[in-house]
Image 1 (cartoon, rainbow, N blue to C red):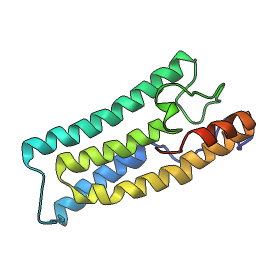
Image 2 (image 1 turned 90 degrees about the vertical axis):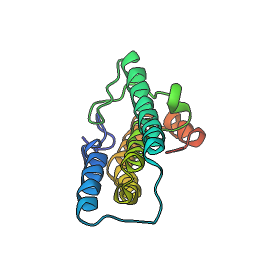
Image 3 (image 1 turned 180 degrees about the vertical axis):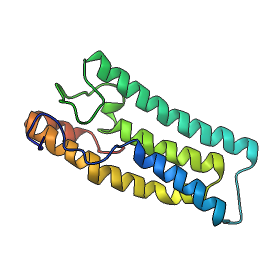
Length: 158
């Protein structure tokens, strides 16, 4: 469907982007580790990275639960019956994509893997270009001024 059709024209499988970045980072670190001369001590890095990753995951689960309460699908290829503005959607228009970025950051800390951290901005850019922008075009076409007003009140990321 096009941007004014029944669903957003998302061009990628969004969860595959951070997964690919994490796996690529792990693989590259195996062959070409980056040593910046410091590391977060082992017990602490698990706690810090784990809190970041779990916090990101929690934002995503909360977002999906809010969608389900409104009989909406988190699947970007399905029609959107209404604009969700509760919970994390009051702070970011894209909490599920923010979740993916936070999980990348969390795994980079847990694994002390600088490759994953280097790929994280690429993850955000790919998600923005191939998922978020098509979703925004669809939502603008579907909801008009109501969505434009929401965009003025709430930032894309945070």
